Length: 260
Ligand SMILES: Nc1ncnc2c1ncn2[C@@H]1O[C@H](COP(=O)(O)OP(=O)(O)OP(=O)(O)O)[C@@H](O)[C@H]1O
Image (cartoon, rainbow, N blue to C red; front, top):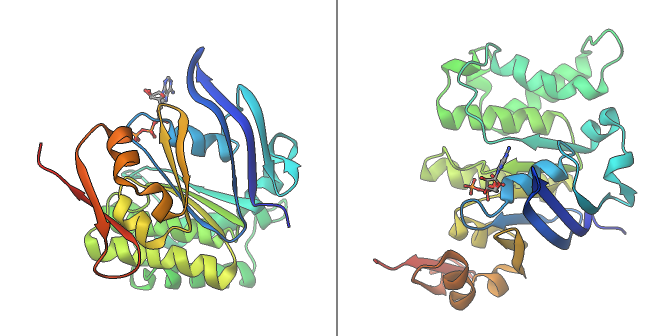
C-alpha cells in the first residue's frame, strides 16, 4: 500500500528566501509521525504546505498515490484535517457548533446537517472529554480546552490524515499526556495517520513511531525515536548541551537539559 504522504524534493520559499530545501520523506499510513526542530526551522511551513494551504516552489507531494495539487479542495477536506496553532480568542461559536463545522465537507448544497452528522460531532466532543462544555462559546474556554475543541473539529471531519501544529503547547502536564493518548487512540482505533509538530522531544519519544528532525529547512534526521533522539544529533541541531538516557517509564529515550 502507498504511504499516506510521499514527499519528493520539496522546496518552499517566502519571497525568494528558501525555507524548506529538498525534503524527501514518506509518512506511512496509520503512523504517529512527529516533526521536531529548532525555532524557525520550517516546521509550520512544512505542515501548511502538506495541508495544501500553499504550493511548494519545487518538488512533489503525493497523497495516497495522487499528487496533492490535483486533489480538489472538497475532496482534500475529506482526506485531511489541519489543526493550526491558534488560540481562537474571538471564536463566537459554541464547542458543538465549532465541532460540527468539521462536517462541512460532507454536507449537500444547503449545508444542513443530518442526525448522522450530529452524532459524529457528539462522539468527537466525547472523545476529547468536552461533553460538559458543548454549549459553551469557545472564547470562554481555557487555552487547553480550546485546543481540544479544535482537535474534536478535526476528528469530526473523519480524515485519513490529521496534521497538528503543536497541539500540546497550551496544555498542562495531564492534558499533554491525555491529548497525545487521544491521538494515539485515533491511530490505533481508527487507522488515522497523525502528523504533528512538537517542541517536546520527550513527548515525541513516548508516542511517535517516527520522528523527523528539521534544521534550517533540511532533514537532519528521520527515523525511530531511538535513531533520532541521539545526544550528538540533538546537540548539533539545537546548538546546546543536553544528555540523552533511557526513560525510567518505558523503552524510549529521554532528553535531559543541561544548565548553560
Ligand atoms: N509568511 C511569511 N513570510 C516570510 N517569512 C516567513 C513567513 N512565515 C514564516 N517565515 C519564515 O520562515 C522560517 C520558518 O518559519 P516556520 O514558522 O515554518 O518555522 P517553525 O519551525 O515552525 O518555527 P517555530 O518553532 O518558531 O514555530 C522563519 O525564518 C520565518 O521567519
